[in-house]
Amino acid sequence: MAEKPDHLGHRARLRERLLKGGADALPDYELLELVLFAAQPRRDMKPLAKALLKRFNHSFAEVISAEPAALREIEGVGDAVLAALKTVQAAALRLAKDEIMQRPVIANWQKLIDYCRSSMAREATERFRVLFLNRRNALIADEVQQKGTVDHTPVYPREVVKRALELGATALIMVHNHPSGDHEPSKADIEMTREVRDAGARLGIVLHDHLIFSKHGHSSFKTLGLL
Image 1 (cartoon, rainbow, N blue to C red):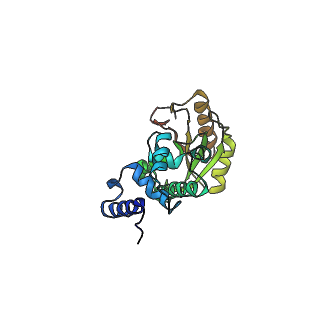
Image 2: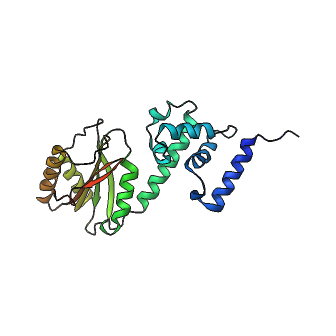
Image 3: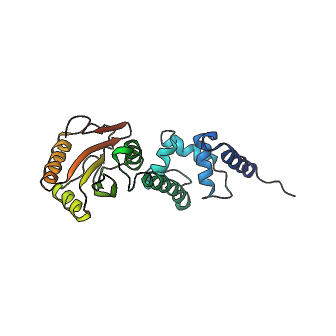
């Protein structure tokens, strides 16, 4: 009887270690191998896993969050591999979102920060989203309002307030990202935030905070005294 290829035995050992010891029992490249197995059932995935980690700063999170075009630049990444990586990313984001939906966000602030960081910090272009809250400060909707370039996203304060009224929201948290890595607010960020705050206040809608995320951290307008 022909012997099974060595990488098949390796897969079985990885699965066993994961099931017995959890994700912490595996380094990033082995956890990534497990994800890739579903895409290429008969292929040794260790070289591709290591190539992906080398390209994306040796970070599992950066690999699954990378733009599809950037992932496809790596030899061996086709539709099946791309789908496997993006499925993991989608599952992680849904899990994080479920932790905060319909719950008072003020009492679950760290979970809100974790969710926003996961969904936005590694984006290659700017995105502006609004978290709409009800009278109990529970999250009722999370919507990306605008998508921009690597350093600019157009935001229209009246549209933000109009959408809040449509949803019956009484409070907002604005969130956007800075792909440059600098999460400090710009002059334009500050001016736009105050326009939204003032427009909402006239209609009884409170702007709790504006959060800016980058790969290196985040800033809070409230903490900085800018609201």
